[in-house]
Length: 115
Length: 114
Image (cartoon, rainbow over all chains, first blue to last red; front, side):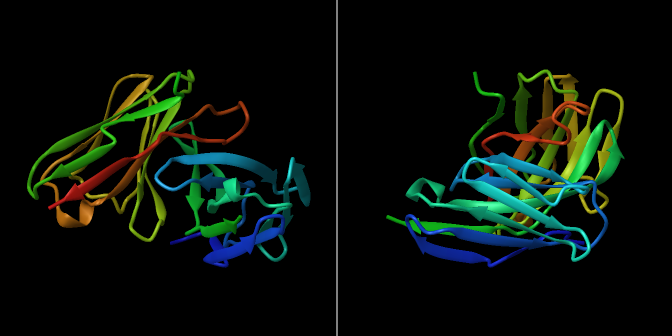
């Protein structure tokens, strides 16, 4: 079953505004990651937050994690037109064999930043 | 110098055909993956594989089979293609124990079954 659920499904903002996307999940996790997908491209890893962390920053990105509510948020500050993409959260439930930590992705939030 | 590459980028084929998608990573990673992204952008794991073990998502039909000639390559072979196989297929790789669990994705192969 699907683990991560992003909210909203689509978000349209003006350049310079902040964009906030939320992710909820169902089971316990080791960490939560956010990925970005530009149209017609593969996913690119943005940031990883571990289950014992509450907040993490990377450049204009700020991620929070609330394990009691099983939710995370991704904030992009001072958005730019180049931030237009789909953003996915992915949860890792632990080692799943074959040397892998199997990630479960949500459906993504499609962000449009209008110049 | 692409980290994870896939070929072909686009694949249009008839129902019932057999096709393969190739994936190569030059990151030195031990583990590779295949994902399927449907028309609603939902990304679902199909396989996790290293040279010792294959983990198969139980929902994947046995018409799909990963084939790995070496550590840097994981190809996806699909038999008897069906209309519902139309999707974007992504290859990814990761290295357990280094930048933990981050996966590096290829650009995707857009498969259209007619």
